[in-house]
Length: 212
Image 1 (cartoon, rainbow, N blue to C red):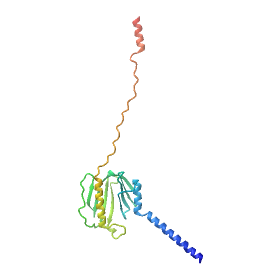
Image 2: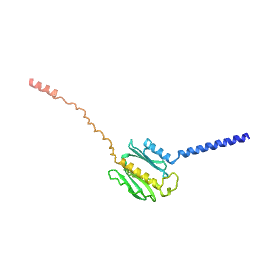
Image 3: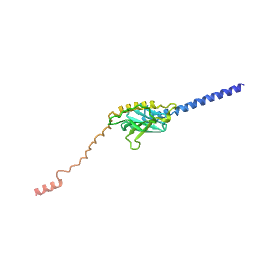
Image 4: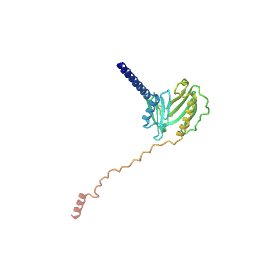
């Protein structure tokens, strides 16, 4: 009986350890935490503000004090880093139509309808980068209905509209111009040794001729 009780205790302890280990792995590999870690590495700071599209494995984070922005996808497996002045505009796309937009140097086009979306709520961030000119975050898709941890259509639309206001305020800020390079300092050429004003030998010859 004692051996059986000891065996059952060991099995219980092993089961508890496996449960804790599994929970720790799930916590560490959580989609949101992985994306947040990737954005933090890219910015060298905790991203603030931060937006993560649940179920898409993508997110965007800002470090406003340093003037930097970072995007991540593939559940944090990939990322791109930008300067804040490289963000040129943001569009809110609802059901494949641009419902609102804010771009540098352009008047804002605000969201003028709050009807429930039917298929899609997407934020499109546009960058001054020929290689990767935009980054899409789908905050809601039709397939998200009823899924745990996902925004519903109305919540996604309000979240997107709130971000449009935040981005409009950000894009109105003057772009910080890079510091001008210091003017080159002119270097003076090395001084050229001046020759004698008179030829000593010629002067001596002329003096002798004059005496004679």
